[in-house]
Length: 277
Image: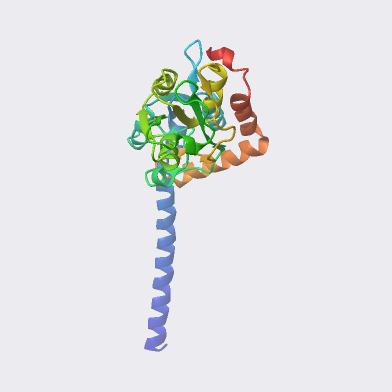
């Protein structure tokens, strides 16, 4: 055997050894990554911690003080399919992403619209629903308006929930109007009812429900939503296993028609109103 042949065999053996070592290392790294996944931690803990804020009918308290709503149903079904219990962690909306990142809970299930700016901080699942923005106006403070352009004026005050996509939509579509931001949904509604704001921008069905509840005080200037926004689960970055589970869960729940059925119940029906009013 020549020196070249000996060298070549040695190099070949070294490459094989390095390849096998790399494969073993990659396998170990994947196993370690899987162990640190929120999915694994939830399974070990036996509890899925869910962050959310109250928005009617996404999530709200019933007469007994229990949480009910579309997102509450989604969270309960998700936890049940994982074989764990669910723990609800109500959180102010403007602080909900920092709370997720600090580990206060495992996931946001709260009607969170997928936006590029939020996606820089968290990862989103595929959309499991869509929602649209609408306007409800004060009959006394803003009579006879019928378009977004009618509210886009410096003498118009718009009430919105702080940190929501409603706030962003109001800034985009009504840049000339004055915004009054509230961290609490009830406060923004009260501002409208008191006539201190000419209109409120929010995702439906809130504007539709308010107009129906207070027909002498409020009205819908437009019958159609002026945006269509995808809604997704928000989780911490760097967790492909959890995101994979959530995306496949959405596929299954959609294929069964379960998500559409629960959305129709909470957004297009009124049976649930006796639970909260």
